[in-house]
Image (cartoon, rainbow, N blue to C red; front, side, top):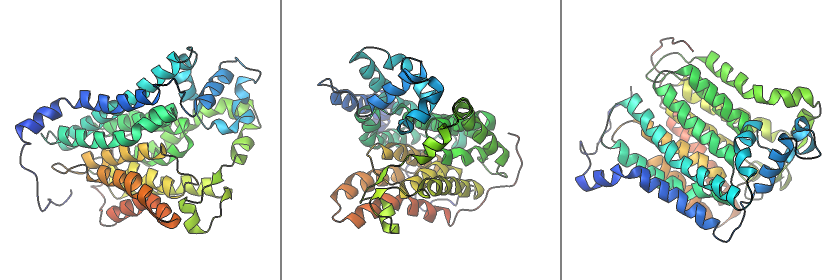
Length: 382
């Protein structure tokens, strides 16, 4: 149990605010959809459309590369097989119809995530008239970054990670650990960094011993979609392991003394391990609501680059922490994440300051976990 807050909001929001909050689905859909479609107004294709389209072509056997050789031949794809299959029908449509439909659907996943998180909060904490207001406010702040992942780069794999995470949290809130484990595993299968979310499958909302076997099940689910490629094309693992991006001079890695240039081989394993351990720490201490934002913050703290769409999933995870942490509190983590990563980071003067601001969310999460205690010890089945 969390200690009672020193202050609390009134029992219910003012009538006008409540009326606005009742229209949250429409407002959030507009906030996500309008900037995304405006980005495509001149017929521009999303920045990473060639990777998506190329991967789909190979996977469907429409190129000179065998489907199972996709990652061995093009390790830069960095998109799991399941997101490619999900996006395939839209990728095969002619431009600009396919890209526009994909962008619109990805944009509308933000209000879907907010609805799932609101349902999780109601299941975990009970009804509160302030939950719709927090969802609306947090979702509007999340929209600041969402159009980038939906339209500027059009990354279905990152969006699917966010949706699967929010759906998994709702299953966890209802005590359906098995379904949550499957969803978290599928999320990790689509985007490598999402392996850090796998320990969240062990969470027991309301107290109880972590169900680490559920996390193991999630890890197995994450591996399954890759098995055909790993077994059918022996060069896949080596190609993926040998792929290197360049370290930006504004990356937090610079604070650790890593120079600009190809990323050292130890970075990715350390990044995934840090994400998983941070999430596992949150689960072990009974602070499951901080697991996702902790994992993604750890990923960003060791990220060699800093594309804007990286921060969209962090803001959604921050909103999850806000609505699940306790009732009668605003989306302060969400707002802080946007202010730090969008405003302060771009206004900062100095490379070291920019890098430190990208690592700051991890420091905040770890500070929140220090006083956190573990929940009640009651074993629940996976």
